[in-house]
Image 1: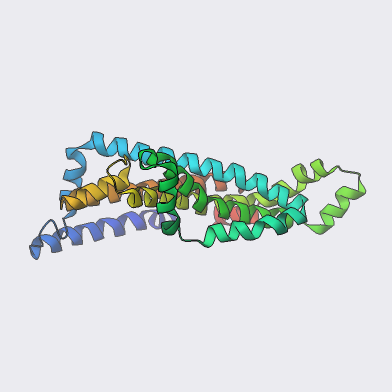
Image 2: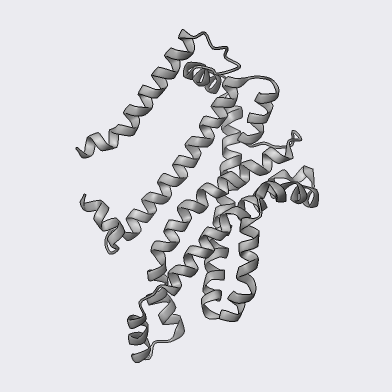
Length: 261
């Protein structure tokens, strides 16, 4: 049963791709409208170096933004829990930054950094959208530490650093890891949106390959770039899910239950 559950997504994917291929050929749908999967694979194999370099560029920006979001989000969350005044002053602005549509920020940011520095604009935008899930989840996790354990730590004379390191951070870890799975996908979205908005031919990532292929009506190449973006997003989510499971399975109920199913 476990094997069947693991294979179910693959089986369904194969069925969908086979039906897609068959229907497109049966109905004689033009390739520029909807290419069959075989044409997408052919487009991917026809120019693997260009798409591969674009994939690497997009991945690099995404990972840099994600690392900055995790570092900055955790650090600011710790400051928020240590200083309620600072939290009251800054948290509303963090919310404003999060709820402002990234498409509205991107053109202004590109003007500020310059169209010749699209990579920097991508990094900033990807960081903006990836930052809040880390900040919000970590802040909630730090504040969710058991009150009885806090009193016990104080009773034994633990310092604030010991309470943070031995109680609050372990309590916040499940929240933080859940936030990283959201943040990783958002970092990729931010990197792609910035390059779409730039639209000046200065981009080097997969988003610009999609724009370029669209301008040339090369739909199979568009689908190939989209497929790489999707696979990249899935890979990021799967890797962060694996990290979460390895970090929590020995002591946290959320992963222990999954391991025992």
